[in-house]
Length: 364
Image (tube, rainbow, N blue to C red):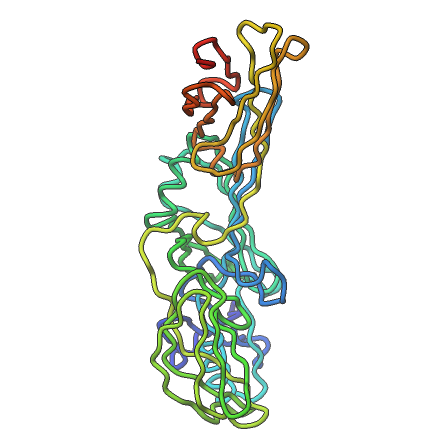
């Protein structure tokens, strides 16, 4: 008779997860998340804390069109710390020896991933399982594909499935979602910071999205030891004070939900977007004996840089550092000749050329 590695404990099933008990190690319980979603960086006190696990950078080849946009997203189980604490309590009521593991932590597990609509998108997607129960998605696309992917991410995102197969041949599955409107985590703490302040608790929101705080729940070694209703929306960057003193030694967790505010781009959710240098070369069509000063800026930005063209320097370049997303969106440079009577800003699309020729009429 073939052995069975895990068997589901149906009495522990919730909308967020299913629990399976190991048949070879009775104290091990496998938690299978219903879904994995884009997570956040840990609250480690750095500038990157609480930012979504989304990175955008570029690989540039030797030719002008050889640009590959690399999109990465870290996915974690879509459970709040309170959900994990509640689930742990229920499992240990059943078995005080219980230890919880995630699918990626089971010895000998293999994982396969599928994504809907990838063929139409033309993207190269690679999904890998990481230690600690999380996943990583990487996508390599060209500039045209990125513009399509950017729209998909802002309006519903990518949907897929993960299947985890164990040595006995059995398998479990979870849905996958890369939806920038629904970012979860950080895994250990959730999106809100909770700090005791005497007989009160201060709750702050360092994320970019509003969070509805339903209640504060105090967890002790044996489960819930206190709670208080709140029902407030904590706006992005704001905080609220709750007049409540949780029991000493208890861990205070939040019963919360993040508010979706509509379409979201990688810039709006404070992803890490690599900066690239965009260089523009100015050429004087008919250099004479006089120097010509040219002011230049990227359309929509305030920074102005000046180059000087003259008989000994008929060409000069200026470099603007831009977020990769802006550099890929066919930016325009605006320029004008300093001291010209009209002094009007002229516009040049960098998708046409990185060279701008200063003609005689630009000086009038």
